[in-house]
Image (cartoon, rainbow, N blue to C red; front, side, top):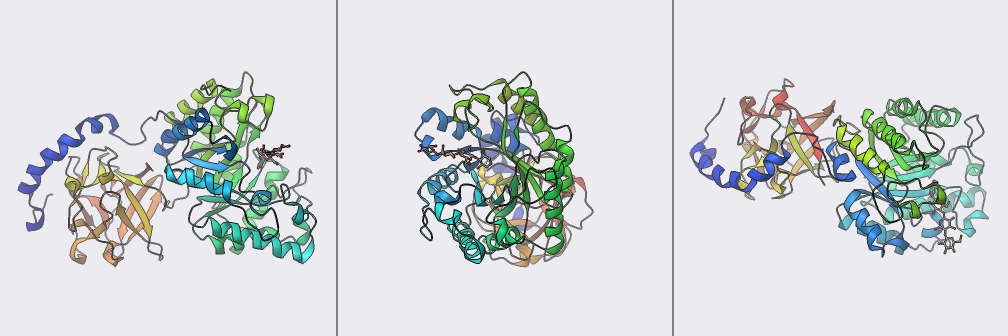
Length: 490
Ligand code: G3I
C-alpha cells in the first residue's frame, strides 16, 4: 500500500531519489544487511550490539604505536589506575583528576565510551584512608564516591562502584577490610551514592576468580539477587577474567545466571596466559559473551603484552611490537561469526548512535534526501551508515524516547499528531510532544517503537523492501516490517 499525500508527492520524490541514490550506491552495496563483518574489534563488536574495550595508562599516551592500536581497535576505554581512590583523592578532600580526565577526554573526543574504575576498593586506598575506620571512614568513603562520580557525571557508561569485596575463602564470604568493617551495608550505600551522583551511568559490581560457578561467584550472585529484590540500584556485574591457560567450562552458564537476575554482565579485565591454548580460550570467552544477550561487552586489561600487569605471561592480543597475535585473529573471527542478539539490556544506550535496520527489508531508517528541514519524510534506504541513517535515543524521563537524527538533530514525529493507521512519520524540531515519544521494547534483538500519542507502531508501509519505502505508524501487530534491529555505530 502506498499513499500519496499532497505533502509527500511521489513525483517530487522520484526525481530526487536519483540524486540520493547516486550518493550512497557504492557504500550501500558493501554494507547491506545486518550484523556485518568488521575489520577491527570495536567495529565488529558494535555490529553485534557490544563493545570491545581496553584498559589504558595515561603514562603511555605519548606512545604512538600504543595509541594507534587503541584508536583503531577499541571503542570502550578503562583507566588502568588513574581513576582509583589513591589517584583521585591523594589527600583527604583534595581531588586530582588530571590523568583520569586525560583518559576520559581522549576517549570521548574519539567517540569511544568509558568504563569508570573504580570508586570503592580495599586496595589502592590513599594513605589517609588506610588508617581510618568506623563512621569517619564511612563518611569519607561515601564522600569520595559522590565527588568522583559527580566529577565524571554524564561521561561514564558504567562505573565499577565496588571492586573485589568478596574473599577467596571458598565460602563466598565478604573480604575483611576497613570498608567492610564499617558495616555490611557499605556496598549498597556506595551504589546509592553513585546513583544519586550520576543517574545516567550503569552501576556495576566487579570481581576476579568469579568466572565460573564457585563459592565466590555464588556469594556475589546472592548479593545481587538481594539488591535487585530490595531495589538497591545495581545494573551490571563485571567479571574480570584474569585467566590462566583456559576458561572455566561453566563460564557462559555463570554469566547467564547473573543475566537472569536482571543485570547486564560485562567481561571487564580480560587477559589469558600465553600458551598453546591462548587463542582458543580467547575465542571461547568471546563466544560466551555473544551467547548471552545481556553480555554488553568485553574489555582486555592492556594493549600489548609488554603493557600487561602480568609481565611474562604475555596475556594480551598484541605482541610487544604491536603486532596482532593469533589470539587477536581468533577474537575478531569469533566476533564476526556472531549474531546480533541484542547485546544486552533490552534497553537502549542513550549515549550511542544507532542504525535502525528493518527486519523485513534489511534497509535502514533514513531521512529522505539528506534533508535538515522540519517535515522531511522518513523512509527506508539501503544501509550506508550515513548521518541521515544514524539515530540517538533521547530519554523523555517517562520511559519513552525521542529518536534524534544525527544529520538534522530533528526527531521522529507523527505528523500533525495523527492517531490513524498510515499516519505519516516525519522529522520535526524536538518539542518532546507525545507524538515524538516512542516506547521502545526489545525482544530477541529486535525493537518495536510504539508512539506514545497514538499507540501505533513505527513500520515500513506495506512491508516494502524498496529504497524509499515509506515509514509510517500502524496498529501494532509485531510484523517483521514493524521490527527494527538497533545496530550501534557510534
Ligand atoms: O607508577 C609507579 C612508579 O612511579 C613506581 O616507581 C612504581 C613502584 O612500584 O609503581 C608505579 O605504580 C604502579 C602502578 O601499577 C602503575 O604501573 C603500582 O606500584 C602498582 O601497584 C600498580 O599496579 C596496578 C594494580 O592494579 C594495583 O593493584 C596495575 O597497574 C593494574 O593493572 C592493576 O589492575 C587491577 C585492577 O585495578 C583490579 N583488578 C585486578 C587488576 C590486576 O591487579
